Amino acid sequence: MNFLRPVAFFRLFGLLLLFSACAQPESEYYALEDFEGLKKIDAHVHLRKDADTVFIQQAIADNFYLLTIGIDPGGSAGIEEQEDFALRMMERFPGRLTFASAFTVSNWNEENWQEETLRHLQQSIDKGALGIKVWKNIGMTLKDKDDKFVLIDHPKFDTVLDFLAKKHIPIIAHLGEHRNSWLPLEEMTVKGNRDYARDHPQYHMYLHPEYPSYWRHIEAKSQMLKKHPDLVFIGAHLAQLEWSVDELAKRLDSFPNMAVDLAERISHLQYQTLTQRDKVRDFFIKYQDRLIYATDLRASASDIVQANLTTPEEVKNHTHNVWFRHWKFLVTDETMQVPKVSGEFQGLKLPRKVVDKIYWDNARKWIPGIVKE
Ligand SMILES: [Zn+2]
Image (cartoon, rainbow, N blue to C red):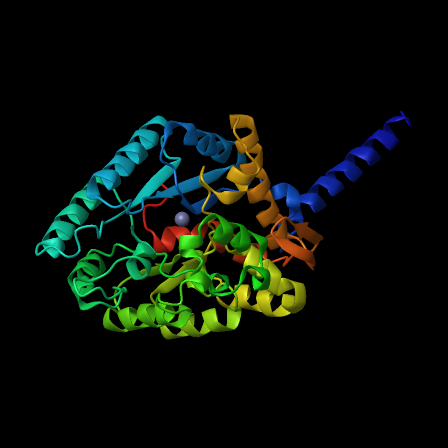
């Protein structure tokens, strides 16, 4: 009977081991391999045609939920087309995506612009639009009858913005451009902006001194927010203050109804991390309720176009790599190099509860209904 004793001992030992594993508190941090298991939201993508379903397929594989955002292509028909595409995708991939829409300013100088816009917005909201994008054509191409640039603080927008504020519909604002756009190519901080400016000289503001200045765009947003304190404002692309967490913090302090998405600007935070990692990390922790994860993924993104990624597999791999690299930057303290930034920096290793907010809670709080459950 003696031979049973060691068995009993090992059973007891095993039970103790199991108990101690269960009692272990959840780690304060995520690991790289938690990426797939965590439900995440990418709150800024642009899906416009059937080929873009590859982004949705990869979102399913990587446990992402998407907000596809419409833009003003220069007419309300184009906006309806984008809405209808989003609705089709929502039917095909239930629960996986929702959409935000836009309004056009192509008829700005017509008498009935406000009426027409309010009618269109109500229609979009009825279809399920959760937010309304305002785009950089406001401020950078739109002109009044007297040939003056129209920015978002123009009084003619007030009725429209009041309407959205009353309906609690957030505006997602890409107004103006990143500050690099006002610099010569060789002085730009990140490669992505250099590539974009080279491909879109019409938006390279260094070449267009006759256009409103960088600070005029920033000021227009502040003026507009002072007039509309109840409007929920999501500054897309870090509200064009991507180059300085200090400048961004000032605006977040001034406007409590303002949040920002990180779309296509994480490289700028990485650039600041090269020399000021603690400052960037403190910024994330202090403003953990105001930051929304997003990428601006789209088929026409310059990294996709330049690398000539055409097959669905190539686009899916690229999408996975972008998402995974950001995860690595936010959750680990590994030393990293990324395509858009020269030099090495260390990941931010944000606490788990901050990561949860950035990838999930904040988008759901600022854009109610973004994930259907
Ligand atoms: Zn975008």
